[in-house]
Amino acid sequence: MLKAVVVGCGNVGLKFEFDPLRPKPASHVGAYLANHDTGLICAVDTNIKNIGGDLKLLSGVKRYGSLEKCLIENAPDIVSVATPLQTHLEIIKLLLKYKVPAIICEKPLAGNLADAKKIVDLLDKNKVIFLVNYQRRFLEPYVNAKRKIKEGVLGDVKQANVIYTNGIYNNGSHAIDALRFLLDDEVDWVTGWENESIAKLGSDYNIDGFIHFKKEILVSIQTLNDAAYAIHDIKIYGEKGALFINRFGYRFQWIKARNSDVFSGMLELNADKGQMIKQKLSATSGVITKAVELIKNGRIDKSMASDSLSNIKIINAMVESSKNDSRKYKVDNK
Image (cartoon, rainbow, N blue to C red; front, side, top):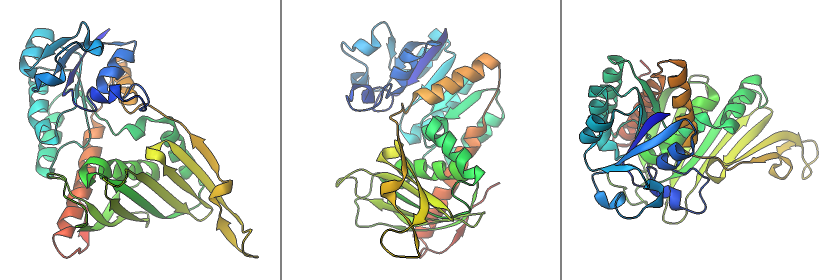
C-alpha cells in the first residue's frame, strides 16, 4: 500500500467531495481513499479549519499545518499538491528535498512563466515521477477522440473554437491543454486581448484571442462571465464533420457532414443527428491511477512538467499580446 499525502485541502484537494452532483471521487482525498493501491495517511493545510473538526473522510488520517513536519514524520510515497498557484514552486522544492518518489501537481504548473521554468529545471535534476492533473489526458473519451481524429474521422481539421469561464490560467489552460492533446500538435503563434467586461479574477486574466497550431489549425478562444453561468466547450471542425465537447467535457458529440434537410444540394452539420456520448468521469482518479502505475513499474516520467510549461508559454504569450495592441506573438516551444 502506497502512503499518500494531500497538501491543500480546499476545493479539489478535499471539499469537492462533498458536492452531491460531482462524479466521485471528486477530490484528491477521495481519489486516494478510493484507490486500492493507496492509503491516505496525512492531510496538510495551513488553514487548519479546512482539515479540523469531525470530518468522516479524514477519519484515521493525520492532519498537519506544516508540510515539512509531515514529510519528516511520515516519508510518503506520493504527494498531491492542491494549493494556490503561487505556492507550487516552494512546495515542490520541499518535496524534492525530502525525496518524495511521486508528485502530483494541480494545474496549471505555476502562476507565471518564471516559476514554471524553475520547476522544470528542478525536476530535471531529480529522479522523480511528476504528473500534472490535466485530467482530460487520462479520460477514456479524450484518449479515444485523439485516436479517431488521428485516424481521420473528421478529415483534415481546419478550425476549432473554445468558450471558457473563470480565468485563462485556471480554466482556459484546461482547454488549451486538451486541444494540444487532441490535435497532437504544438502552437506557433497567438494573439490575445483582455475581456474588460468581466471582473478580473485576482492575478488571473479573462483573455479572448486566437491560437494558431503548426498544422495550420486556427482556434478562436473566448471567455464568458462565470457569474452568469459556467461553460467549458470545445468545438473542432474538420472537412468531414465536427466534434463538439460540452457539459464541462462530459458530453462528446460526433457530427458527420450529411445532406441538408433544409437546402437542396448542400451538406451540413446537423447536431440533432450526431453520435452523442455522455459519461461523467472523476476529475482526480485518472492521474492517481497513472502515478500508481508508474511507481509499480519503476518508471520515471516527468514529461507532463514540460507539457504544462508549454501551456503556460501559450498563456503568457496571449497575456503579453493583450498588453501590446493584440499583436501576434510567437510561442517558444523549446
